[in-house]
Image 1 (tube, rainbow, N blue to C red):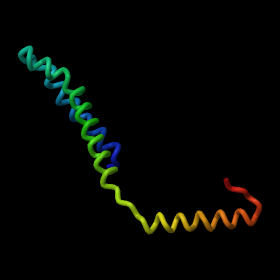
Image 2 (spheres, rainbow, N blue to C red):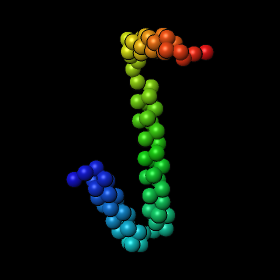
Image 3 (tube, helix red, strand yellow):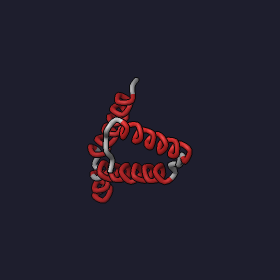
Image 4 (cartoon, helix red, strand yellow):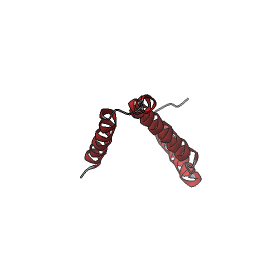
Length: 89
């Protein structure tokens, strides 16, 4: 099963559970909360996704040796291109 079919299967299970809760008539205060479960889950998903992205960006490590190597290659490429007639400002 590929990832898309797993997500669709999980989403279908959540929808069936939500519809079964909607069909049963609960007290007014519970029914009001049950109606907004998809919106609440969407907001929670967005907050968790944002937290994961922010953590991954903050924990991203620097590769100083790779940066120096890339800068040297850029200098070599500029020298080679200036010899062929290109101008850099």
